[in-house]
Structure formats: structure tokens, C-alpha cells
Image 1 (cartoon, rainbow, N blue to C red):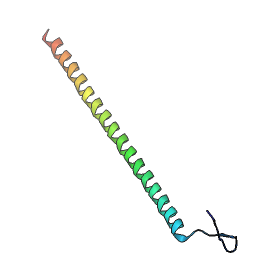
Image 2 (cartoon, rainbow, N blue to C red; image 1 turned 90 degrees about the vertical axis):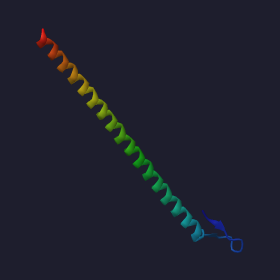
Image 3 (cartoon, one colour; image 1 turned 180 degrees about the vertical axis):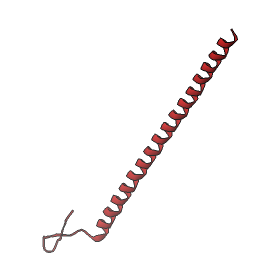
Image 4 (spheres, rainbow, N blue to C red; image 1 turned 135 degrees about the horizontal axis):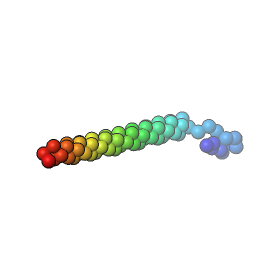
Length: 76
């Protein structure tokens, strides 16, 4: 963004403070983006772990049914 100098009528460069603010804002946006990505990855890992735990529980339950079925056939 350029500003007009009232004396000469030529555009002047923005002050360094504004460019520092832009750099800081860019840095903060990048940091926020990284944090959001990190949270998303952590949530995905938790979902996968929960699904794996549920699958393990299900497989254990099925194995009990098979074991129970085998025991009842031997008694007959």
C-alpha cells in the first residue's frame, strides 16, 4: 500500500512498522495453520485407535462365541 506525500505528490513507501505487522500476522497465520493441522492429525490418530480397540474387542467376543460353541459340541 502506498501513501501520497502531500508536498511532492509522489507515492512513498509504507513505514517499517506496517511491514513488521504483516510479517507478524503471516507468522501467526502459519503457526495457527500448523496447530490446526496438528489437532486434526491427533484426532485422526485417536479415531483410528478407537476403531482398532473396538475391532479388538469384537474379535475377542467372536473368539469366545467360537470357543463356547466348540465346548457345547464336545459335551453332546
